[in-house]
Each structure stands twice: as structure tokens, then as C-alpha cells.
Amino acid sequence: MTMATTINEQIIEALYGEALMLADEARLCFDMRIPDRTADANDLTRVALSIEGLRSTTRLMHTLAWLLNQRAYLAGEMSEGQLRRLGPLPEDRPSEPDQLALLEPETRALIRESERLHARVARLDGDWRAQDPSENAPVLAMHGRLAQAFKTG
Image (spheres, rainbow, N blue to C red):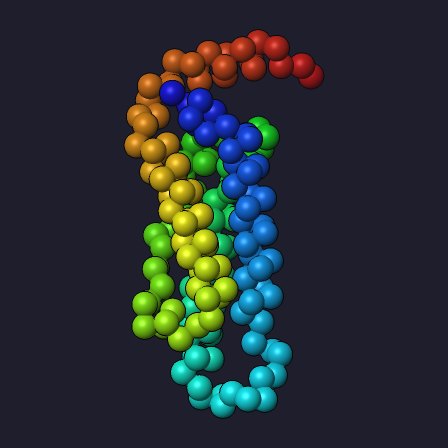
């Protein structure tokens, strides 16, 4: 079973759109260049925002990178072998409850949403990687022979 039979373009595009939207929201939420005159620079809330912001944006960037690789594969820009060699989606580093408790409800919701998106993509990646790539070998060999037979130039 190839990736195309388990992960289709519509799923990848929907997840990619969701990841882009969350990344944009995270950028706005965790932009700490905006001065907060009421908070001390050493304030535990600002530290928590910084830590959880880094975790969330890293999580989203890993997810986006994985989705971009899937899009490249589905567009025929990379082979299944190349896709497999790129490695799995990096493991998530979940947020710390003590840090989350210091943040506003909207910020916590954004962080949780990024964790859920990463978990969904990780399940797709894990299921696909669990498939035996050798079961596709005869089909891939046939594709290669057909490509050679119809090669022009």
C-alpha cells in the first residue's frame, strides 16, 4: 500500500492550511517584542510565555516541514524512498502544566491546538512508516520500466 492510498492530497492540504493558520496565530500570540509596561522582564508569566512559545512554534514548524515533504511527494517532486529517508516527524515535547497555568486561556487553547495537530500528523506518519515498503517493490519496478520505455530524448 503506497502513501497515496493512506494519505491523500486533500488530507495533506487541509492539514497544511490548518498548520499555516496556527503558525500565524502563534506568531502573533508569542510576539514578545510588544512592550508590556505592566510586567517585569523577569516575570514568571513572561518566562512561561517564552518557553511555551518556543515549544509551540517548534512543534508547528516540524509539522509544516513534514507536510511540505508530503506535498512534494504527492506532486511528484520526490520519490517514496526520498520521503522515507527524510525521517519521521520529530517527537513532540508537550507543554508543562505549571507553565500553562500562568498563561491566558486563549494562549493555552492555541498551545493545545498545536499539540492536537502535531498528534494527528504523528499518527499519519506512524501509520505510513509502519507499512512495509517492500510490498510496493513490484509496482515501483513496473513504474520504473514504464518510465524508461516511454522516455523521450
